[in-house]
Image 1 (spheres, rainbow, N blue to C red):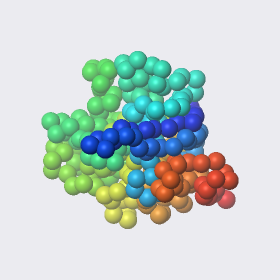
Image 2: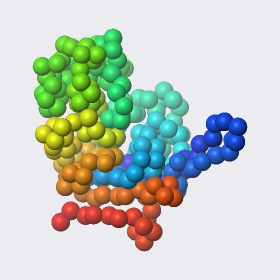
Image 3: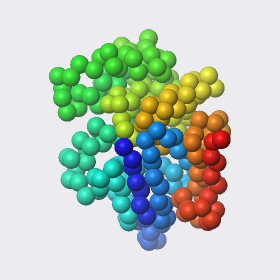
Image 4: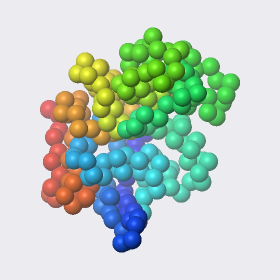
Amino acid sequence: MNLYLKEIKKVFARQGKTGGTFCALDTTTLTLTGGKLIEITGRSGSGKSTLLQIAGGLLRPSEGRVILDDTELYTLEDGALSRLRNRHIGVIPQGHTALRSLTVLENVTLPARLYDPLTDATERAKELLAMVGIEELADEEPMQLSGGELRRMAIARALMQKPDVLLADEPTGDLDDENTAKILKLLRQFADAGTAVLLVTHEGAAAAYADAVYTMSAGVRAGIKDGGEGVRRYQKA
């Protein structure tokens, strides 16, 4: 599957006495293609996470369209959009989003059980926990995990449904060098298997795993611009 972001823009209302608005993401077009890993880098505040949330059906754009193959995400009702996300889009959020009342294993199986509580996803979840290197923590509660372990649990959960599109927001932020390399290799493997992967990161080593790297401009909050307008793009040989 391919995900198309067409001329999306996001404007927020300012809170406080002054009021007004600010543009978090200016007019941006991007295509995520199955089998490719695209990296987006840039300074904090440049709109990278806003772009990822819009791509994942989590934040409605002020302007523009987001299309998964021939389905336009933001024309769907909330229930239909939630089901589409659950089936086709995996999101690795920047923060820690574990449900404390569930074990690590139960957190990972949650996407599979969300719409079909009788689904037995245990073996799939154990395989994913092994892939990210925390299989021994399956029965622990999230509060017992370190920040890096929680991040790896979130990665396993995002991969639970074998998504067609994987959106990763700083997935190696809490990881040491060894586990950073392991996760980047894992994302590359899923891209090679046909998943469209979008990686938002400050991690310098990530470029070696990407098919293309785009830099978002923090100065003008312009997002990704077309070729001649300032985007630096690096293509693998």
